Image 1 (cartoon, rainbow, N blue to C red):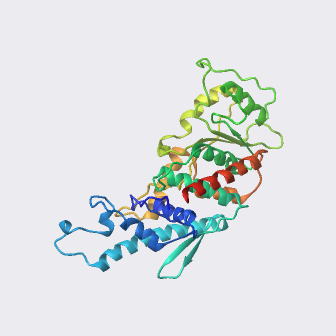
Image 2 (spheres, rainbow, N blue to C red):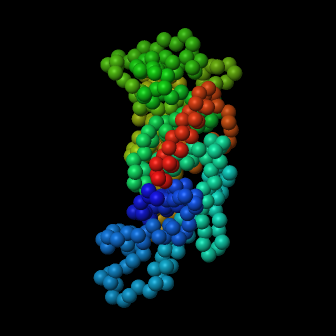
Image 3 (cartoon, rainbow, N blue to C red):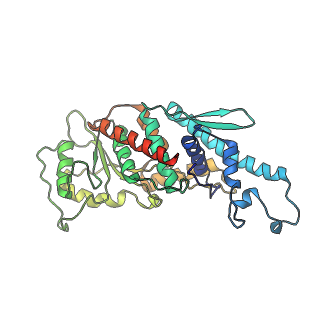
Length: 344
């Protein structure tokens, strides 16, 4: 299997991702608690930080560590990972492309993806991106940024039960210049006679001014104000430092009088928004998840992570994007190629 051992067991969400990926990429489409624990014990370098979880050397203690104590540590950690997987199952239900088989003494996760479900497709594509970005998968994966942009474009329309526009450059409608894309966006929103003017500072080479997705829902009268989302799509590890709010004031200058004052800021990411969370002495993992999500709301707005992406794909098939079928075929092909490469 083309997967790496875990390098940071304190990040429970990432360990749960490892279990999902191991099932997804296994020939038997299954991974187990034993596989998870074994992923830590395969490391050979004694200085590696993971060794302390399973193997405590003689230099660190004057007494030999009893096997049952070591086992207890790994059991407790595996229990935390199992709880996180259980939370995903409870939150997503049928939208979760895995099934848990738990016998009490042990458990295993089974990859049960259904090819006709968009939620399973989006979740598994995002999982592959997560695996590569966070070094769970050792091989390069092509077109990850584009894949996430496609997914964000499709689910953004479902957030508002309306229409979305792929604004991030390069755009599939081939509107190369910023002003052309702005005019196209305004026409699609409903301003048929809009004639936007570039801001005085424009040099003519601007691409998207940091806005990747615009989604909106018009009312029957097509008048302002409408429900509108401005979104940033982030598949890199520095996503928490890229709030869309920092770009919106400049972007609205391009819209002129057509720019709506109030909007929903959104961040689209392929992993769980609490991927970096670690438990502390006084706060459990789940408490820390809640803490961080409150911070994310204040800094990023609506954080649309992998779980929420799958949920949005499940809630409704309504979308104002008439090219959805084309992009779904693209995602199916991409996932198949990546899986084939990683399981060779």
